[in-house]
Amino acid sequence: MLKERALYKPTIEIAGENALIIYFSDHTSSDTSQKIQQTEQRIRLAMTDDRMIGIIDLIPSYASILVVFNLLITDYHKIRSQLRLLLDYSEHHLQKNSHVEPSPIIELPVYYSTESGPDLAVIAKRNKLTIEQVIEIHQAKEYHVYAIGFAPGFAYLGEVDKRIASPRLSTPRMKVPKGAVAIADQQTAVYPNTSPGGWNIIGLCPINMFDKTATPIMPINVGDKVRFKAIDKSEFLALGGEFYVGFEQLS
Image 1: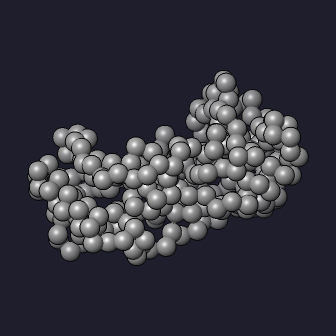
Image 2 (image 1 turned 180 degrees about the horizontal axis):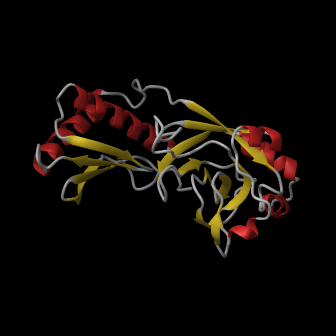
C-alpha cells in the first residue's frame, strides 16, 4: 500500500478527448480518500441540480477522480472551469471534516481453509503464525475500498495487517477461481471472476462481486468499508459458492 503523504492543491488534467482527471495527491492516504469521497458527492450533487451539465461518469480511484463528459453537450473548457470553481470553493469554505455521507460497511462471508485457500499455510509459516491466527487477523479489520480495477468488480481493499502482509507470487497462476479471497502486500481483494492472478489465496467468497444483470451491479463501491466474516464449507455452498478441489485443475 502506498505511504500516507500530505495533500496538495487538487490539479485538473486532460485524460482524453472527453475526459478530465482530478489529482488530489501523489500518494494515497485516509485523508486523500476522504477528500475524494467528499468531492465526488459534491460533483454528483451539482449534476442533479444542473450546476454541472454534461458529465456522464465519475470514476474515483486511489488519489484521483476521472470525469467523463459528453462532447455533444459541453467541452473541456467548460467542465474544467466548473470543476475548478467547485474545488476552490471546497478548499476555501469547507473544513476537511465537513459533512460526508458515512461509508456503508459491507460484510463478505469467506470460507477460509487450506483446501479453499492454497496459500493460507504459506502465509502462516512465513509470518510465524498459526493458520487460525491468519484467519482471525484477516477478518478482524475493517477495510477501505480504495479503487476498483484490473477487472470489473475487483476492489482493492486496504490495509492488511502487517502481520499477514505477503508479497505477490513469483509466478502468477494462469487461473484464479471466481470468489478467491487473496492478499498482495498490504492489500486484499476478492476475484470477481476466474482470471490470471498472482495474489496469495486464503479462502473463497460466495458473493457475486460483479453481475451486470443485477441492481446494483457490484455490492461494493469506492469509499465503502468491508469486513470479512468466516463461514464453514456448508454455509459457503448454501450461499451458492463454487468449490474447487485442487486449484491445479484450473491451470
